[in-house]
Length: 153
Image 1: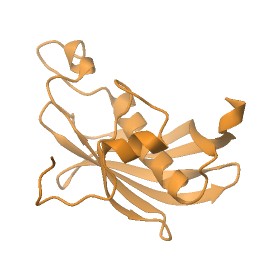
Image 2: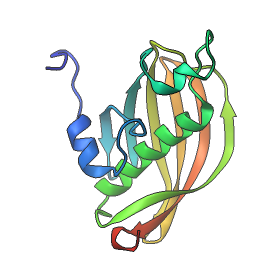
Image 3: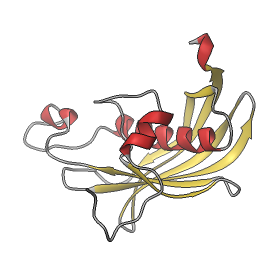
Image 4: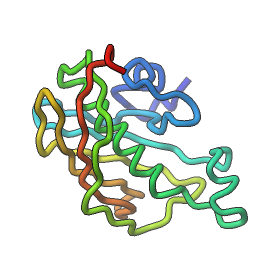
């Protein structure tokens, strides 16, 4: 049972129906907001001491690897792409530009994953992505992706 005071659009089960990722690489716990027409989505990743990457990055000073924050943002963008009707395709990360890491993400943090579509076509697209800790910007980047037919993978 979830917290009755928190509303969300998609939970873990619905997300795992959309994304091909599984533990420990499924990095989106919930979708809080989605406006398909505006090309906007907000997901959440709750970080606990039990995350496998905290065991080695870095022992005694656990910090979420920046590349995994980018992956969580890419997965959030992938959910948006799916909801825009590309259900027979998978969004594969193509490039990362303008990436800036502004604040470390540590156990106990709740990471809000914001993606806004910049461009989307049948072949791929780009999103402006921000990972937020409350009102503080942790990571920002532009993520490019290719859309590939599921049958071709």
